Image 1 (cartoon, helix red, strand yellow):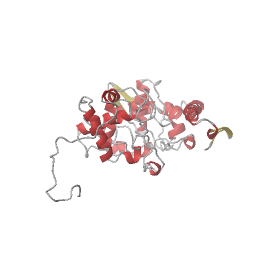
Image 2 (cartoon, helix red, strand yellow):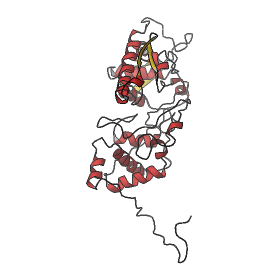
Image 3 (tube, rainbow, N blue to C red):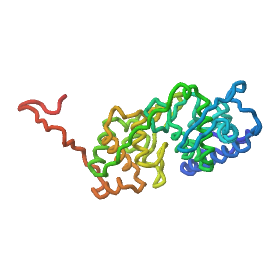
Image 4 (tube, rainbow, N blue to C red):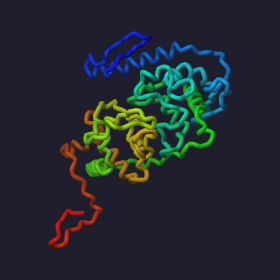
Length: 326
């Protein structure tokens, strides 16, 4: 329960509204306010090419996305107008609007990014950052900046890279390989459910994927800010994950992890087919979404059968021995 205050005027007490309407209003309201604040932000159009620290020159950073090359020097106006209000002039996530935002804006100075195609702990590719700007980040206040031209986005990618020395010392990781998705079967869904239990995904996401697991209330990000697990059960056909909406995007999240959050990479824990089975099961948690996974589940009677590992040998307890102990 809190107050939105704009120019020191109480705007709305969220707790007085219907919960769903309040949530919808909050998203729209915050985006409108941020757009307004960013638009009216005073920008020196003829300012010199200085970096985030006034007495340091802007690093001549570039980005390369396909045939488009971005230049940091060409993004200073767009960054200050559209991005600095949240991410701050120094890229540290402490912009003038940050106090109103939950989750907090990304801190570019540590160069840790959630949405990547590269292994955990590595820098994202320029394409990854380019995609994030255009796609936005679900369940955050990072909007979809699809009004930018490709060159504007590429320039902003280059500008973002000026905030952290990591970009001068390290190369981006190599994108992980995503194998072809196997067919969805009731067996793959069943195996995915077994993995969901074995890997203890339910401790954060909850047994029904509602983001209400026993550990959910205790989770924090790398800056000790509270963070909520993803709620798979919310939303319908338009539901998106934080870093995309396709099955390939979900697979990528499993294998790269979401850096800066408690969501780890499972690249060293599970095999590619296991990851695909987990994807198929997670889709069935999206009960209000039409999907091939839910179609398969419905055709099987709507109940996921217990998983039986056909490759595991069947071992019978010795005569007279107590079964089931370990």
